[in-house]
Image 1 (tube, helix red, strand yellow):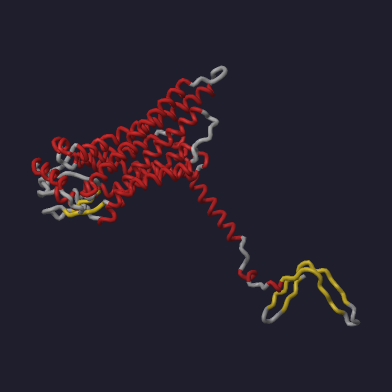
Image 2: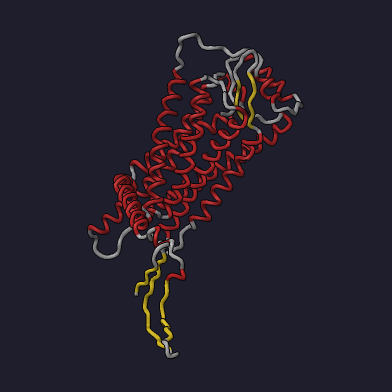
Length: 410
């Protein structure tokens, strides 16, 4: 969702923004009321906005590829223990966040941006949920990629060194991401457009908190983008140099070549994730900086909301690229995906077979009705006419009593 600027007269918009900065209004809707002073210009009937077509196509691809690909990756991790390496489990955090975006956030974004053209139909609660999950996914991606880079650095530097603890690392990744995204829940809101029956969904900070808002976004820009990018660049530079220059002791053979090739492919794949993260999210962060600190320059470039939505769509496409890199182009995962249906069917058959055997071993209803006292084992004692006692060893005596006859079986 986020902020946007409809097609206003530029002078009116600049004056509205200046008035916005001078006001002390604490109502969050003041942000909206000061910026929105004219009616929204509707597209002529029958016209097609090229940007909307591009955004809709991109969203559709992301939902399709990320929905199926990430789900298959998660199934492979759950089903095959041998795939649960430290790197794959860390990528699993990335997979889960991308899957949530593809299946929850993007359908709502598609409806809001493309189908109903800036008309939010799902209420303020879902507006907050979608904004929250969108930013949680961003922060999880950043933290997971940073953890993968650090872990890879440790492995290349010293193969005997203990690797990152996946459980604790994953917990930190998600807890920190959720904590940083809390303001998205607190300040997400829906507001009606003036002179229109449409409803806007976005993150609207109170005017009184504009300094906190700017400080918060500067912190996120540095802590969640610039600093991680610098750290990952340093780590991957070291890893690349180490892997490409590594020499095995003794005479070189085919086994060494396979190990070297596998290590280089893995490093290249992880480095590709990092590079695409930077390329996809840079336009979004540049737009956010211009919106918050260089608003006059931004509206001279464009006052159309499509500029923001294109930046957001490019950022979301990072999920699509992630899925292609660690699922489609990862031979170790694709080979398990290919055999997953067959193995799942065999497991289902074994489970059904065990269930049938268990049911066949259950005692019959007649046997279950027998009382415990009907089963005897031990010594059977009989008293003779002369008073002597005769003891007979009885190994199994079953007494079945019916209404008309009593049968004793030895």
